[in-house]
Image (cartoon, rainbow, N blue to C red):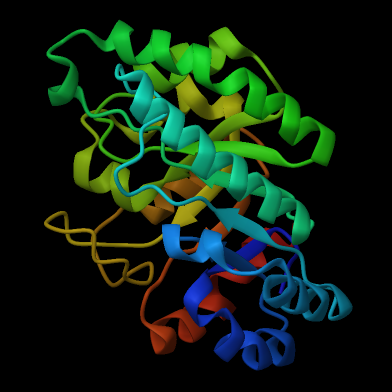
Length: 256
């Protein structure tokens, strides 16, 4: 499999899936939840060594439940920082090239005051970016509930660091986005680091394989070609059989 393509692997399933990853040369995006952050360095280090010995690169997905780097409450930002600091430590243990974070924005929480989230986020990220730069590990902010790219674009434009970029999640855009792919990529294409590839029917976050729902994958790949963008990507397909069927179709696009 191309070194630009990864597959979603929950940390809780990593030990069980290691033989499959190594045998099929599947590179994981390891998704951490909060209990995983308390696993011992010895246990995680053993898994990291096996992946490294097999020549597989790793991407990390940070925990996100209840966390918000753009929270107005400083105590929420503090616990978010502690969780993200630990995530970056573990990214270093796995020699990860990239960590994907949820940005925490949801417009209904801010009552039309988007600038409150932006201001808090601008205070939050610089220290983590400096730490990531030391590790040579890029950070990518994933669209979740964002209907428009404006908030992410403002934040990324203001910070303007090669170590902080955008993870475009086509499944989430299909559910929540209110603008076309062309408008989204006009705003955030220059910041694009990574893709999350999964499908749905526009009714729930089903994490299906491309073509099993109604998201515009053809349009996405046309845009990537037209703008000559070569991001890394993760297949975020939650059914293992569907995932293994999808790899031969998607992988060639990430060997170019």
